[in-house]
Structure formats: C-alpha cells, structure tokens
Image (tube, rainbow, N blue to C red):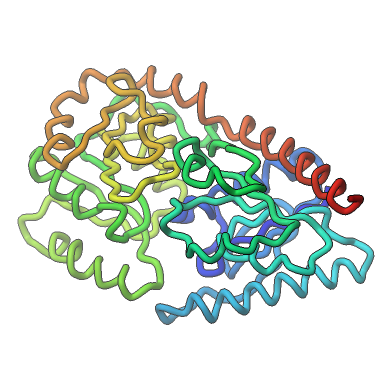
Length: 355
C-alpha cells in the first residue's frame, strides 16, 4: 500500500513530541513502513518519518495562527495528493491524524481514515454534520468510542500502543513525582503542583507550551510563580528530549495524571508503567481502562486523594507495572490492528465505488 499520513499542522511529528497524536503518528508510520508499505508523512518543520517526509510549513513563531496554518497545511496536502495521482504514484489511502483534514476529502478518489484522538467536546459539532462519503473513523479507546457511536462510518477502536523497548523497567526510584505533557489547563499541571505540596514531595514538571495565547497565559499565571519561588520544590524541564523523558519516567517515584478532560488515552501513563513506575490518575475518560487500581497505580477523584495515594506507593510492584504494559500497550499489536483496518477501509471504499 501507499499510505499518506497527515499530521497536526502546528507541532512536529517526532518521538519526543509533547503531543500524543504526533507521537502516535510517528509510531504507527514507522511500524507500517517496517511491514513493507510505502509511507509518506505530511507535517510541519522539524518532523521525522521512517518513509518520505513532506513538509507543509514552518512551526509558527507567533501564537494563535492555527486557522491560517491549517489552511496552508491542508492546501499543500491536497496538492501533494493531486501531484502523486498525476505522476502515476497515487496514494491508496490517507490516514488523517490531524483532527482537521478529513472535512476536505470531498472530491478525493481515495479513502480517508480519520483517527479521532480527542474527546467529542473538543471537535466542532458541525464537522460531523456532512461527512464526505470516502471518510471512515476510528477511536483510540472504548470510553471515547461510546461518544461517537452514532457515526455511520465509525469502524471501531484501535487502542494506542508504545515502543516498549524504549522504556526500561527500573526498580530503584528517586524521590520526585513527575508530571509530563502539554502545558494547558485541562491537563492539570497546577493540580499536580498542589498534590505534590500536600504530599510534601518534590515535583518535576516536564513538557511544552503550545503556540496558543491561552496556554501561554495559563503557564504564566498558574505555573511560573511556583518555579520562581525561592522555597518551591517544583522543577521545570522544558521540551525534554526522548532520552530525558525516558530517564524522568524511569526514575520517578510516580507519575501524576490530574487531567480535567475526559482523556481518550494516555501515552504518559503507558510509558510510566512500562518503566515500572506507578501512575496516580484522576478516574476520567480512558484512564480507568489503563491503570490497574492497586496494582499499577491508583485512580483518584480529587487533589487530596492524589496526595494521599503518594503514601501508598510502596504497595505497587514495579514488575507488575511492566507486565501490565507488556500485556496491553505493545505498538506491534496497534500496528497490526491499523494494517487490518486499512484493508477494511479499502474494501468498503471499493464496494462503494462499484455500487
């Protein structure tokens, strides 16, 4: 197959990306390329690909340019598809992980599989009012899938996976707690700070602020004062490299996931457990399906419960965390499921064309 992968227009596709969708695209494309398929990634600057990489624009230096960048990104993707068709190297399938390209699929003569990475509330409702007939969907967790069940071209769930070989299990942990991800209010970094303070434990915040004013304002308002305070036990690691991220995950006492959103997945939780590191998470969205209560971490419902769970971390066996990750989060399983889904999409699309 010739598969075109479409990324989110503002952030690079790379293993050390702060965004889960960008990390997933990187893993899926690499695994599908390993299976002998021809892969092309359409993404912004500083991206990586196992196959061919087509850059659609630079990472914006100014905030709040999503609409402009997205229009340019989609226009370049459509032109790429046209050029490949004219050069007799047409794509067989488009895998859209951008969250915004698939409404542009009207007029394309190839099928589009759109992976929905976000909760239903993060998409404009109008995006699902008039779906192009060559667009098919999948979700990344069962909890997310229930909110999209009415979509006629919903093909089901492919659960996210990680490259387990990258994340070594470590028994001897340091004393710090870790929060890792995108710096925005719904990810709850400020709540992680409060939980660590209540638990009287040092905290490392590691991540990246996206180019949106409300993200930057949140960081300046809720996070920066703790970093500047002389007596603070909060440390900031900005845009960690993959090696830095792995070490932070492997040696942390626990990873905190105090998300205020209905998370559809959590690569951070998967990666932590692969390192033998417990996860203390709010019981929202897909997280109860990822964290085994009392075995690989704790599911809580408040900052106070999160802080109290820190005192119970000695109940968690790092070996149990690793075994749970190996049984549930392997990227090979995920790639197998996507490869099967591609064949399903191609079959459905051929039947539509023949009808």
